[in-house]
Image (cartoon, rainbow, N blue to C red; front, side, top):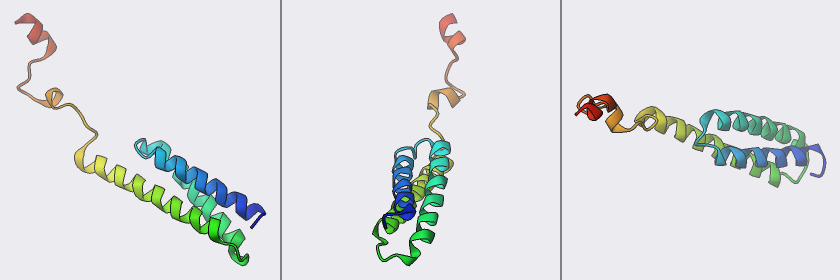
Amino acid sequence: MTGRGFWLATGAILCAIIALLLFWVPLAALVVAVIAVGLAVAALAIGATSRDRGITALGIVVTGAAVLSLGCAIGYAGIFGIGTAPALNSPTAPSASEASAA
């Protein structure tokens, strides 16, 4: 695969790696992962008739890993929250104005 399918698969791999690195920023990773999925599907459709499907398969696997890690990050944030400090939500903690007045 030396034509368009090769370059689409290479782009899918690069986008998927970027999405893997950005999975702590879910919105940006989601945009990049959607682009990677589109490129991987296009590479699979173009390269379906060729014998060399190795890089296309690699693009699909890495894209799947990026989507899975993104889903795990979103699920973790949904279950445990985004990580606010406990003192900010505690009703017993004195506010800044009360602490300076005391």
